[in-house]
Image (tube, rainbow, N blue to C red; front, side, top):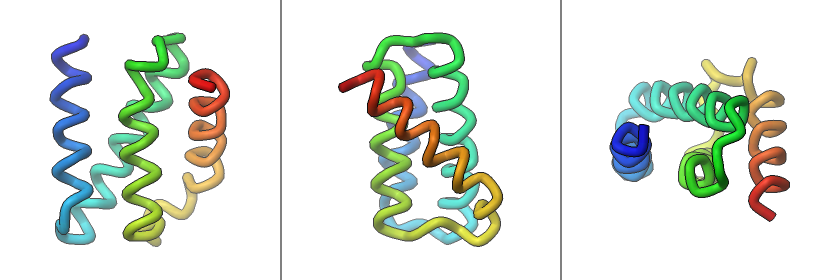
Length: 87
């Protein structure tokens, strides 16, 4: 699992670079599911904090893609839970 997490963190860093809008939206969708999975399985902060940070950076820099507006509230809730668990 740790190798998968490491690969995902690397992918998040790449996605935060200038990429086509479609690629960012897809990566954000994957990150949303990854964060949900890590929180649902009570993983330690270091397992999900990089994903939460990557999501936050991507949304702050590029905004929430229109295609993902339906998950915006849930994503915000997951980010708040992540912050509480790591705080």
